[in-house]
Length: 252
Image (cartoon, rainbow, N blue to C red):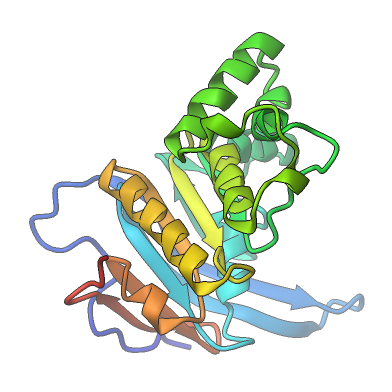
C-alpha cells in the first residue's frame, strides 16, 4: 500500500545544512500469531529522515502505529522489513547484545512515569546507565552531578526520589537520559503525570536542550505541545498521514 500523502516530504528542506541523525527506509512492522498468520500490521512502510538537532513530535490516535514507531526509533524493537540507520550505523543486522549496547550509547529515554529507583540517591539514579557501560564509580558520579546541573538539579544531590517534587523527579529522569551524551533524546508523553505549570517548566527545559543542539523526538497526543516542536509527523493506520514543519511555533 502506498504511503499516505504528506504536506511536506520527510526529508530535510532544500539547502538544509544539518546532517541526518536517523533514517528509516521502507520500515514495516508486522505482529504475527503463533501460527505465523498476520495479527497486526502496525507500520505499513515508513520513510522518514531526521536531521541532527531537530525537535520532532510524533502524533496519532490509538492504534495509529506511533508507539511502534517510537520503539523502533529507540532501538527497543526491530522492523519486520526495511532498515533503520542511526548516527550513520545501520541497526538492521546488529545482534541483540550489540544493539543493546548501541542503544545505551546513542539514545536517551524520558518516560511519562519517571522510573526512578526509590532506594537510590538521585545522583545514583542518574548514574545508573553508566554502570551498564562499565564506567568507574567515581567517574559515574561526577558525570551524574554534571548532568543534574544541566537540568538545574545539582542542589538536590544526596536526596532520594521521594524527597523531590514531581517536576524535580522528571528533571532527574531527563538528567539520567542525558548522562550518556546520547545523539537522540526520546520523550514519551513526558508531561503526562505533571500539573500544567510543572509541565510547562519541563517543556521549557526541552526547548533549552534543543537550542543547545540536542535532537529531540517526542510522542504526544497534545496539539499544544506539538506546536512547540519544529516538525510534526502524524501517523494514521500505520502510515504517515502528514509531515509538516511547524509555523509560528509556541515559545514562552
